[in-house]
Length: 225
Image (cartoon, rainbow, N blue to C red):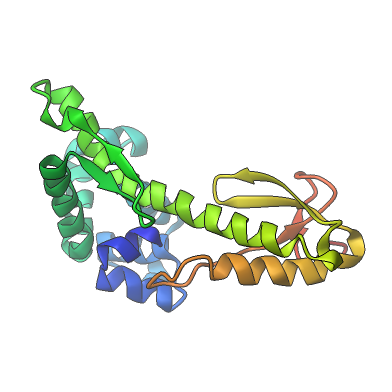
C-alpha cells in the first residue's frame, strides 16, 4: 500500500481502492489470465514478485525463490513492470535522485544516507541501490505505525482507557493488554486510529484479533473470541 502511494501507480491504486487481493490481481496481470482462474501457485508466485520488487530482486533471485528458470523469472519481472509502469518509473527515479543527493527519504522526511551508491564495487553499489528502493517504502511503513502508536498512546491516557496498555509493536502489528469488558470499545478505537494514521492514496486495512495468547487469537467478533 505504501508502494502504491509513493509510486502513484494508477493500476495498483485502483486495485487497493476496489478492495482487491493485490497478489491475485498481480497474478492475473503477470500470467495473463482472468482473476477467477488464478491458481494458488500463481498467486504465490505473484506474491514473491510483489515483495521482491521493492527489494530490487533479480531474475536469478526470483528463479531461486520460486524454483523456476531465470528466463521465466525475467519474464515475470518484465510483465510486472509493463503492467505496473508507475512502480518501474518510481524505482528508477528514486535511484537516480539518491545518487544525486546521496540519500533517500521516508514520508515523514527521515533520511537514510547511502554513500555506497558511488562505490566502484558492483556488489556494494548494487546493495546500496536496493536499499535506496526499499527504504522509502519500509521506512515510511515504520513512520506510519509509529504515528499510530503515538496517537493511540495519547488516547489511552484518558481515564476510561487507563487500564488498557500498549505492550508491543511487531512490524505492522500492535499488541495491547485490554480488560475483557473493554475489548469491543478498544477495538473500535484502535481500528479508527490505525486506519487513519496517515493519509495515503489507498485505504489502510486493519484487522483485529483478540485472545489470551498469540496461539489462540481469533478475529474480533468471532464466536468465543
